[in-house]
Image 1: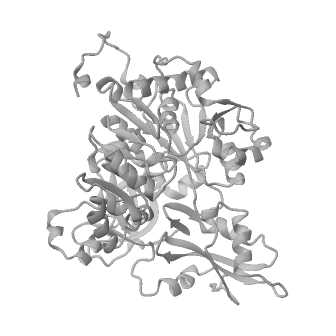
Image 2 (image 1 turned 30 degrees about the vertical axis):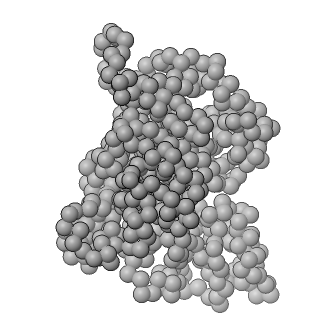
Image 3 (image 1 turned 135 degrees about the vertical axis):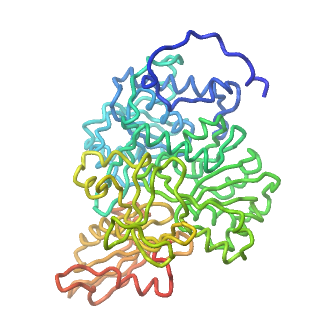
Length: 547
C-alpha cells in the first residue's frame, strides 16, 4: 500500500519517560494512516480518522471532568463507538468498565454503583433498562447516548456524535500511566450471588494482546470480525491486538449466521473469535455453502470445542481452522491454547477431536500454568492423563484483584497463585485437559452463570422449599442451568411457571432451561448439599463434567 510508505511530518524527539505514554493507542495511525481501520455497516474509518475520533472522545471526557483513575462505564454492542471507548478512555489514564448488555436492571444498578462509575456511555437499545434505575444511580454524572437516529431517551443525556463534534481531534495532554495501573474492570459472575469486578492492569491487557497477536498470528492484512462480545474480557484483547497489527476491525452488532456468512464474502474475513455455539450456528446456516473458500480463516474458541463433525464441516464449508484457547476473566483471559503439532495430522478424525478438546499448553506471555495435586498443592499432578488436580497460574496475566473485595481476592490468589477452580489432568505430552469444576459455575454459550444466584431467585418463590441448580449437557449451548426443586406441602407449581418467574427476575440466559420436581435433595450429615450426586444422573457415562 503506497500510503504506508509516506514519510510522516518531522517531529521533535520526545524525551518524556516511557511510562508517560499509554500503550493502548491506535498504533496503525502512524504507519497506515489511510488504511481502513474500522468497518461498521455503512461507516468506514481510516486509521487517521479513527485516531482523531479517539482523541475527540478523550477531550470530551476531559471536558466532563474525567481524568486519570476515574471510572467510565460502557454498555455498547460491537460497534465502532465501543472500539473507540477502549482507546479514548484508556489513553486518559481512566478506567473502562464494559458491561454485559444482557443483564437485568438490578445487575446494572449494582455494577454501576459498585464500580464507582462517574459517566455512562450506552447504546439507545439499552436506554430503557437504565431509565428504570435512573434514581438508583447517584454516582453517574453524565449519560452519553449512541443513538444513530434511534428514538430519544428520557435519560438526561448528550448524544455521542454531538459530544465528539465539539471536541478537538488533536492528541490530548500526555498522562503518566504506570503499567500496574488498572485499565479495565470486568465484572464476572462468581460463586456468590453478586458479580465481582476483576481489575485488569495495563500490563495484564498489554501482554494478553501480545498473546493474541502471537498465537492467533495476527497480521496487518487480517480482516477481524467481532463476533465475540467486546464487553467479554475486552473482546479477549482482540480490540488492541487488531489495532496494534494495523489490521481491520469489522463490527457485528448482533450474532446472525446469515450476516456473518455475508461478511465472510464481502469483507473477506480472515479471523474471528467466539463461543463454540457461534461456530455451530455458522456451519448449520443454509448460507454456509455460499462461502468463498479461497480465503483461509482462523477462529479461536474457548470452552469445550465443537465435535469432530462440526470441525470437519467448518473446514470444508468455511475454510476455517479452529484454535482452542482457555482462560478466564481473572487471567485477562488467555493462559493456554491447544497448539496443533504436525504429528497430530496422522490421527483419524475421532483422535484429532480428542486432542482438540484439550486446553493445551501455556501461552507465550501469560506466565506459569500448573495442575497441582488436590491433596498437596505444592506438588504437580503426574503427566499420565489420569491424576486429577486444579489448574493454577501466576504471572503477567493474573488480575490485580477484585475491586473493593480483598477477602474474595485472598480466596482466589493464594501464595501468588491464582486458583481457577477447574479440575484437570495433564497428558504425557504436557497438554492440559479440563474434566470438572470445583466452583458452582455454569458456562453456557460462553456466559458465566452463578448457580448460587439462580438458586437465590428460586428461593424467593413462595412455593419453594428447597432448590439446587446444576449444569447439564446441552447440544447447542454446551451446558445449561437446570433446577431441581422441592415444593412446599400444599403448594402447586409447574415447570413453565417457575421458568417464567426466573426470567422475570434474571437475565434470560441465567434462567433455568428445565425444572425437575423432587421429594428431597441429597445432603451430608452436616446438611451440605451434594450437587455432585445430582449431576451424576445427567453426566453419567461422560468422561468430562464440563462442556
